[in-house]
Image 1 (cartoon, one colour):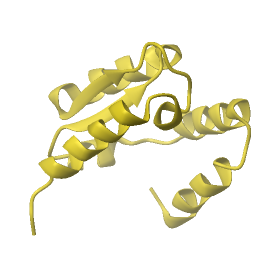
Image 2 (tube, rainbow, N blue to C red):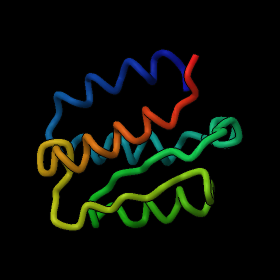
Image 3 (cartoon, one colour):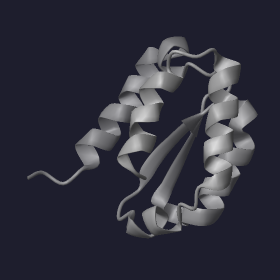
Image 4 (cartoon, rainbow, N blue to C red):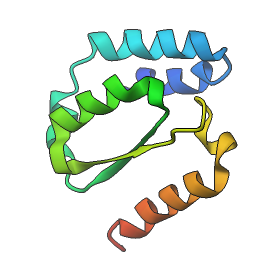
Length: 101
């Protein structure tokens, strides 16, 4: 992922949910993540709402044990707002699993 693509993420956060979804889907559909997927060397969490089950299935098919799926059944697209305790716990567990330097 190039720097220009990374800079686009904050701009997306200012858009409505639908615009973000469409922009991200467009971005994902034209981007080949094979090299990035190959460099993943630990299990990463993917938190998602039920509507994103196809995305979760895609990641699981591509990454296998390198992705840990966390489905938030009762929440919408702002998981960190809808269930901050669970979301923060997920992030904390991931950060704690990283190698200490």
